[in-house]
Structures are given as structure tokens and as C-alpha cells.
Amino acid sequence: MRHPLGARHVRPVVSPALVEESKEPTWLTIPSWSVVGKQDAVIPAAQQIAMSRRAKAHTTEINAPHLSMVTDAGAVTNQIEAAAKATD
Image 1 (cartoon, rainbow, N blue to C red):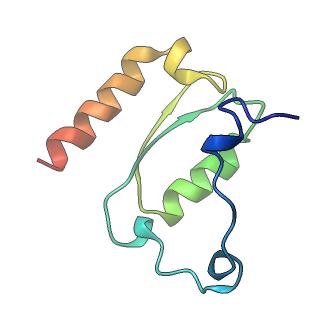
Image 2 (image 1 turned 180 degrees about the vertical axis):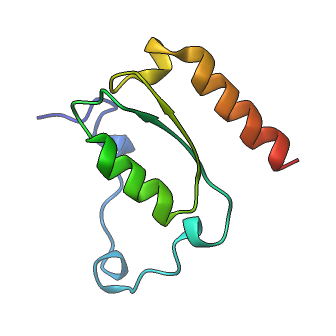
């Protein structure tokens, strides 16, 4: 299968990427926001909520499927705006 951007845009993996230890995850040190679609059939809501709690995210739960930004664009926009105002 060809890469959609063509081979010239795909960088080769360098060996340090395979053995270098990862650093502290950014979700531990910067604020996070999440929107959980409770009807998501791709990522279960319980799993999304658990990840959001672990990241101490400001979480909004909505009655929407996986593409909540399409189903409930207003709720997603509100969460983005809240994050922007909080990080000004």
C-alpha cells in the first residue's frame, strides 16, 4: 500500500526512536480537556472517562457517537472555547 502523500514524505525510523526511553507524558503537566460521546461504539465511554480522569481533564459527557464534533458541534466548540479561555 502506498503512502497517501508519497514516499518522499515518509521519514525513515531512526534507531534511537526504538530504544530511547520516553519522557514524562505532557498530560501530567499541562491542563487537558475532553469530550466523551456516551454512545461511542469505537472507544467505549467508560474507557474515555477513565483516560480523562487519569489526565485530570476537564471532561464534558454528551449523548453522541464517535464523531461527536459532527453530532454535537456546539458542545465540542464550548469545550474548545473553555480550554482557550482557561489557558490565556
